[in-house]
Amino acid sequence: MKMQMHTDGTRGELGRRLLPICVHRSSSVAIILFVLSISFASSAVAAIWNLTDAQFNSRSVEVGSIDASGIHIAENSSATVLPWDDVLELSQNAVAPSAPTGRLSLVFRRGDTLSGEPILLGSDTLHWQNARLGEINFPIDSLLAIIRSGSSVADLDQNRPDDIVRLANGDTTHGIITQIAPGGVTIQAADGTPTLPWDSITAVLFSTAPANPNAPRGRMFRVQFTGDESLTVQSVALVGDKLTISMDDKNSRQIDAATVAGIEQINGPIEWLTARTPAENIYKPFFSENFPTRFDRTVADDKPIREKYPAFHHGIGCHSYSKLVYDLDGKWAGFRTQFAIDSDSPLADVTVRIYLDDKVAFQRVNVKAGRIYPLVLLPLAGAKTLSLEVDYGENYATEDRFVWLDPALIRTLRQPTTQP
Image (cartoon, rainbow, N blue to C red; front, side, top):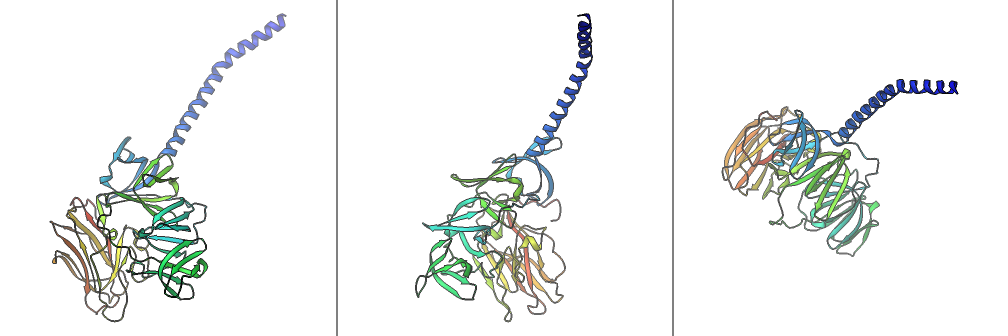
């Protein structure tokens, strides 16, 4: 008994000695786990994005969330909200999804592209299946074309009085598209109503929709995905690692924010000219060259502006002689742009003019290859029209490929703090 009591007492003493150590170690483990949980929670909630503000200045920020009030960021050890009136774009290095992108690409009149497969055309609405967004519907008037993945169409921006289906063998069918389905496209043509299978089609080009002067021009957002896909939506919201995009009040999707390459605000502090339809689009080749104006692409090699000029967001590719005329609505204080010769040839030479109500507000002669020209910032002063002209210079029209870079209307006329 004494031995047992001694043993128990020893155990009790040892327990008393070991208890603080165990408690200390447990506390340490708890503290470590708590700190790690905070770290993991922070990394899950906040992510590093590149922010471009309304003055075209860029910096890295830690984004906690996004909502209707703006971008919630952690800056200088405090949380702040950057309102949408001060934001142009957020971008990041996105993670490509493992899901297949689809054999076809849906091209929108706004310039967006979404891969996938058609489901059904009904009541002037195309039902589309996308690997990232699932089944999603779009008015047919909002669409420009359906193109086989890997193909390109040089005349996407041209007006068309009817629908066109182009086949891989070079044939073309004009008419009215009556059905789009997984099996193919049915088009009402002069000689019948054939259904053409997708395997034989390279492009479906929709007729030009009539302009709608009452179309909404409020704030919207272009969400750029990996794989050169994008979609313009009415609102975006970021909570944790999920981005919710809303096409309208009844149509929204939640996606992994890590697969989003960028969020660009449309009709916020600026409006890109590429989002507007020019009142006049004039092109007069000097000889037999054929370089009609391209929006957000270059005219010669058909490259996306952001691919060839990564420091810029948008652009207009053209060739001498060209003139674009835009109607203004009095809502904008100024116009800004840069420009360059989109050619390496020393023979390229153009004269650049910007008109406000048919009066020259800016002119630059002997524009040459090899540089991006400085920012042009013009007050609109109540002008009714804005015109961009690329005229012949020396050497006739030799290699006169040209690009307007980041042409935009701006709400507040302020000199940028840094040169874009």
